[in-house]
Image 1: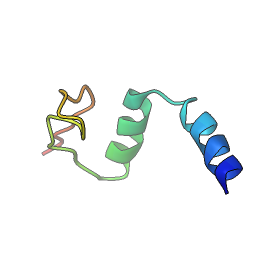
Image 2 (image 1 turned 120 degrees about the horizontal axis):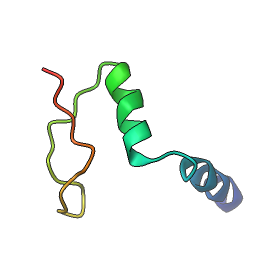
Image 3 (image 1 turned 135 degrees about the vertical axis):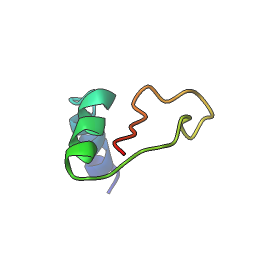
Image 4 (image 1 turned 90 degrees about the horizontal axis):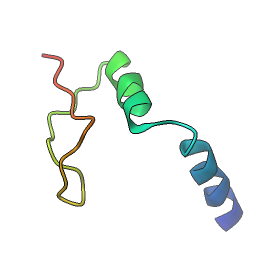
Length: 49
């Protein structure tokens, strides 16, 4: 199972945070959160309203 998660991590590293945000935005998800889970400013905060 650890090998699977390691491979998933490698695949995720192929995409920038902006690309991920654009993907979710195109699917209709809106991120109104201005800070990430670590309390830092989120550079990909989206507000599509």
